[in-house]
Each structure stands twice: as structure tokens, then as C-alpha cells.
Image 1 (cartoon, helix red, strand yellow):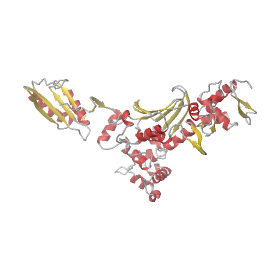
Image 2 (cartoon, helix red, strand yellow):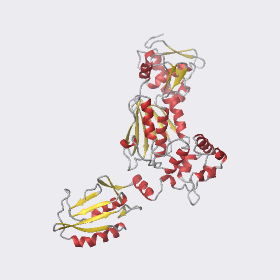
Image 3 (cartoon, one colour):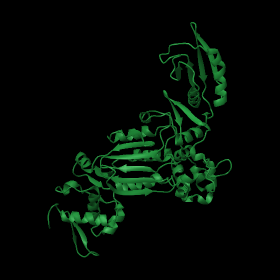
Image 4 (cartoon, rainbow, N blue to C red):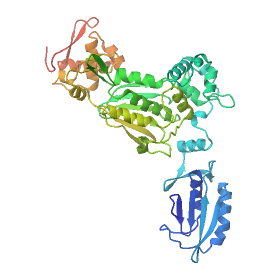
Length: 470
């Protein structure tokens, strides 16, 4: 006695078959009957009867055979049940139990589905998509994958002209019966949303809480190109890039290290449970929250992710394709690389937590003013709006007025294109024309901007100071 996978019971009850089930579904263990919680042998008066009854009940209720031993300490008899880990999922009266740490839990829902597939040597993305054919595969997505794989040195250039079917077969994306797997449609499908409505990546810009949504985007389509599309939207619309010079060399770096942010996005896409809600990225003034549905594998904790660990992909096929495309490593080094990038940029490491049935990465942000203060007044900023304008505008140019994030972006858009219309800004910022017109009216009243000329041919003028009535 004394190992961590042990239970001690003073007497036998049939409900302890659940514990045997839990041990068999996990790493195995031992149960001692006739021993109290202090590991003191108190003995059994019916040990010999139990020695016959317990093995029979294990076989009848669980369908497995385990060793049941009669032990002695002094003149006291007690029983040891030695449970071996099972390669197959074990059920007790139609329910599945799992011993995790010092507790037993009943597996349900997504956790049960994932457990059974893992025991059978499969993952969710192995399941066939009945009715899907090669006509549902986007050749452009296949070509994009081939280009990435060849560039990463993980595929030979001779394979660039491979047929769509050959590429999918070589990637193991057909079942033995010739059906396309879930992963094939998710990675390369023409209309992924028709098969998997939750295979989308939602981005929202908020102030300090979720009640104040400024702009939002929903990125849909195949997974092989999703991260690239997400990064493009983030760079051009949501995040800013400080611009400065080292000698004659122009340096423009995203506020969050590019490689680290991509790695986090790849992780969210490849580890998402695709029978649950969409991936969500909430961008606040001081932080970014990236959440994907699906808890961590039982072998990992949030703290362990940022340390050396083995790779436990939820979706084996998606992870394999991402590896061959050069997007990720296959050795569980992703979070180590993320940590290195954040340390190199002198930024606090992201924190990882399990939240709402999924995993959330929280990234701290600096404001534009903080970046300018650190770099000096000569730094420029790419403000991250659709027009991609490089500006020197920051809140200190209009010191008497507290602008919202959306209004600050509107000032940047106006500076880039003085003839911009309210309709164009509403499309750029993904809000209604009425919202834009309300913000324009407020900024005109505050003396931040002025409109000159007619509605059709006029221009916007940014005034020198706020709170003036020029």
C-alpha cells in the first residue's frame, strides 16, 4: 500500500464497481477492502465470501477479469483488488467512469465522446462525412497547402502537380471505406459551413467589457487558410504596428509578436472541438482573449502548457496537415516558442486557463500612447484599419477630448481619406451608418473635425484642437 492510485474502503459495497470501472478506464490502480482512510487494516468478517462475490460481480457488470487477493495483517483479513488499465472503454450499467487524480468522475457529452474515440485509437476528425465527394474539395486550398509544405521543406517539389485525390490519400483523409473524413472537409472544403456551421473564427473589438462592442468580423472557410485570413484582418483592422527606424532600416512590428500570435491561432484552430461553439477572439483596450471550445487533454494542465510537454492533439489529422504545411511543430514545442517570442519582445507571457468548457489564452496589450512613450515621439503607428493608413495620430493631438476607440479609428480614416463618406466608414468598421453619423456629429460638436463643401464632393478637416468652434 502507498501508491497514488489506491482507494481504501472499510467494507464492500456494490457501488465500488464504479471505482473499478474508473481505474480500468484510466491508468489502473488498487482498491483495499477492510482498510480505513488512515490506511489502517480493520479487517473483514466476511472476507472469504467477498473473495468469491467480487470477481463474479466485476465480470458480470464490467465484462473484465481482475485479480482479487486475500491478504492478512496479524489476525485480520482484508482484500486487495488489482485493476489493470483497459485498452477498451469500460462501462458500468451504461455509464463510463474515469479516475482522474484523487477523484472519480462520470464521463458525459464531449468528454465521453473524446474518451471513447481515443480508446479506439481515433479522433473526431477521423469520422466520415457521408455524402461528401471530391467535388466538395477546393483545389485552391489544396494548392495553398502544397505551396506551404514545399516552402517548409516538408514535401518534395515534385508533388506540386499531384491530383486532389492523391494529396488527400497521402494525408490519410479517406476512411478505409473510401469516404472523406471530417478533417478533409474542414481543411480543404469549398463550403465548410454547410457541413460544420461552427467552423468559424469570430473577432470582436470591445472597450472594457462585452457590453460595448465596437466592430466585429466572422472569418469562415477552410481551416488551411483560416489563420492567414485571421492575421490579415487583425493586422489591417484590429491591431496596431509601431513604426520606427534603426539607422536607415524601417521597422514595423505588430504590437503582439507575429509568430507567437500565429502559433496561438493555429493552436486554437487545430485543438478546437468542432461540435461546439465557434472560436472567439475578444480584443479589449488592455488585453486580448482567444478562446476555443474543448478542454485540455487529461494529461495536461494550463500551467504545464508553458513548460516542456508531449504533444496531445485533439484532432490528429488536422494537426498532421498543419505540421506538414509548416504551421506547427509535432513535439509539443508550440507554447515554448510562444514564450520565447514574448520574452524577446519584453512582453508579459500569455496566461492559459480552462474556461466555459474550453481553453482561453489571455494576452496583455499596451496602448498606442505607451508604445510611443517607450520608443520616443518620432515613432509612427499603423493603426490597423481596413485602409491600412500609417499615421502619427494619437490621443495627445486632441488633448481636451476623450475619444472612443471607434472614434479614434474614424479620425485616422479621415486623415487618410478626407473625402470618405459615412457609408464607407460604416462598411470599414462593420457598424451601421447611423452609428457613424452619430459619432461624426459628436466629434463635430466637440470641434475635433469639420465638414467643408457639399455632401457629395465635400471633405473632412481635422482641426488642430478639440473643444473649439471653428
